[in-house]
Length: 203
Image 1 (spheres, rainbow, N blue to C red):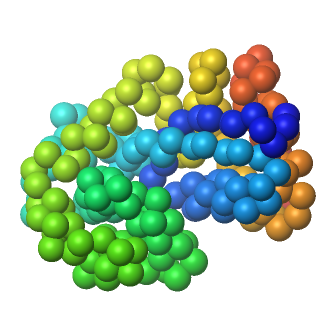
Image 2: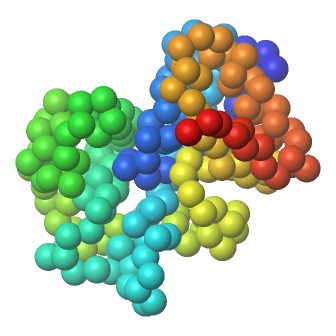
């Protein structure tokens, strides 16, 4: 795998998931190295939805007055997309949640992050209140389940069709990120016959 060959994949994610944060750190470290060209397409997948036992209930159709874990962050991400500022707010929300332990279910927190990410906050607020703002979440989540059998995050889906649910250790981004990334792509995209590798560990 060379630096001139872009690695493209969809990555289904939920902002609340620590393994999504670790995957984002690996991707960012690989990008900074400039040794690989990485082009992920971040797609929504709600862990709250997949874990719900309430038949017929959905994150995207639940009333705005009902507290739903993670829903505000998805709406904020989509509002940022409408201003072509997804990457900036996406990064900020991941860092706020997993590095700074901020409550990204709090609208005040989200609006502060949006301002810092350079968004038009008045438009951002209007878009957060738009009843259609969660349609992309619905579309991505349902496609993830129906087309790829996604059950958790992060799940990577490569152009040729293979999909892989990935959980990285914290040490994966400390040393040898290119080797880690190359091995991940080789197994996830190049060897669909491997369905699962799980390391045992002592408690």
